[in-house]
Amino acid sequence: MRDAKHGMIARRTSQLLLMAGLALLLPVRTTTAAPPAAPSEAVRREIALIEFYAGGSALTADEQREAADMLQRTMQTAPKAEAAADAGAQKLLQVLQTAPPPLIASVREGTRLNVQLHLAVDPALKDQQQMEARIIEAHDPVVVFDPQHKELVTVQTLRALRQADTFGATLFAVPPPGADFVSQMREIVPRSWGSMDSGMREAMAHAGRDLPFAAAFLQGIDPGPLAGLVKEWRGKIMAPKDAAAQQLNLAEVMAVIGMTAFRHNQSGNGNVAGQLAYRLQLQDLVNRKLQEAVRSYMPECNVTRPDYMQHWAVCHP
Image (cartoon, rainbow, N blue to C red; front, side, top):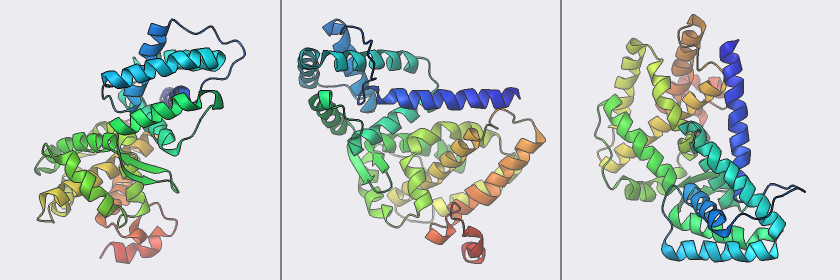
């Protein structure tokens, strides 16, 4: 019961953070908004949130001036809307100071997608929000954008995958990513996107959200079965002769591990590692989902498909 309660609290916290993550682009609508904060403090919060959504990249002096000038104008033309937006920004920045890394990554990823979709535009702050979106996109360029499925890979996603490949290189005893990893993946990921099945594309797009869960998830797998899987996956990772292709394979494997870890965490069982039921369920996830998702990138082998079992023989020769 305690673990279920903790899982419920975590999920509610995540939902609240995701809703708060729209503070920059969707001001909180209220009829009791306080007067705008002192310009210096409001500008500081505006710049801090833009930098957060842009992947932590510092704004240039010109961009800071542009943001400050825009904020000054909207405080005059739309004071209530700006006051509400600033109140939301202040609350979100406070929450982010103590939020765990997975929730921070989830807030950044979710709002970054909204920026790309140009969602949550308040008419009163349209010019300001367009300015914010332009600066964010300049600091966090798009690598792949699929508006139909609402999947987005940006440079920030690739940075998360680089960290994952660094961790995965030790796990699988393969070469770590080099300094040119991001530039390599900016070239190879768009070319490979069409050949990935829907499950793999989803895993790659949500790497920033999912990968913080990977380390704890892997620690919960029994060493014996994990060693066998590591050996098999290492062969697949190293199959190409090209080093960049090997890094992409490693990134795909780590993205699937991250997605599986995230889904397992969302199930509410992430805090009962010592229980037999948890260990059995975890092993089932490894054997029936994680392993088979990596085993083949053919669309019919995507384990999220409802007819997946009909293709068992093809996916497991």
